[in-house]
Image 1 (cartoon, rainbow, N blue to C red):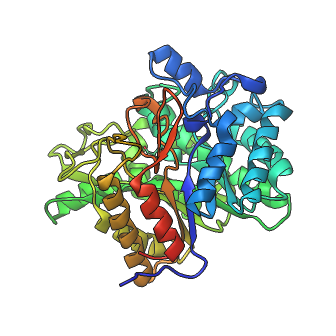
Image 2 (tube, rainbow, N blue to C red; image 1 turned 90 degrees about the vertical axis):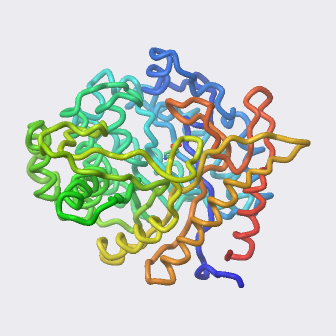
Image 3 (cartoon, helix red, strand yellow; image 1 turned 45 degrees about the vertical axis):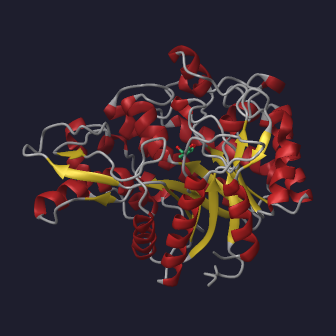
Length: 449
Ligand code: IFM
């Protein structure tokens, strides 16, 4: 039996600039915080990644062979404006060529303006805890729109502000590697403000664009359904999920969340008059990233710091994931995906949803020119079935972008984690379609499972 998706469902794959492009000094590109952070920490860097900056035509051909009609990619701010302000036409020209090549192959481009690679020059001015970046981001958005806006209809301002703020400035595992919980909350607010200002700028440019932001959600599970466990789950949920979602919906930061975070003393003073209106620009769609749930357990003392390094989180711990895990140690729970989509549908009053990322890292091996990545095929099959179930039950899900087109640079984990539908040999840059790519191509061709 085929489980069909709605007519016009948008099937795509997704990537991000720093994870695939390489060529980090080509054509006037300036350093981003990921260049400096990886160099300083002795980590693998984004050079050459998938060498996509030079091989983009080959990659678009692959997309075309797969028959996947949408492609979500991000623009590197430091390519387009190496110092965060001054335009580098050669950087812009790359994305111009990429968009034309996609369109020549009948593939619809979806542009994300910020996927974590802040120009280092702006980090030198304080990075995201500096609210002046919100206006600079809006200028950058407009600059990119001026060049691509005649051909690109789908725009995402920011990918996963949670990671950019809380991992970049809170526990410091991501660039710029700062450990300051109070600053991380301010960075989170300023990223939302930047989204609001960029959305206004994009809309003021006219044209028929669809504007979104992409949030990563972690539904929370507990073993026991009692008041203490529910409160533990609430604390995690509000900080992970609703810190970003509720203000975007025009509801401000939830009062319980403000109370949870009051001991850090930074968030409320950072919210200037008018900010909450600016950041709550109406969204055309919400981009949803889902990978795995979290598990929460209460602590006896509500003021004890959590074992989970999210800024200001106290009175609860997260528990280890269970069952068969991905190679990143993430739990596989497709049923949580269905529940998440249904909850979002209700909480966001029917706002259309697009799955902007979903996928899994597993170890792969090329044997006689084939990659039999059974576990990834199963992950996609189960998670697509979960999306289908949510649609059947009423969620307005308009599309699904598989993460990721290519094995790529997985941030602090370097090249150790493979998320691609296409295997990349990082020595030779050879691309090999995995079984999961063939499986996905078949789903797309049938518009169903
Ligand atoms: O690779 C990342 C991506 O950049 C953002 N979302 C999660 C993916 C897997 O960790």
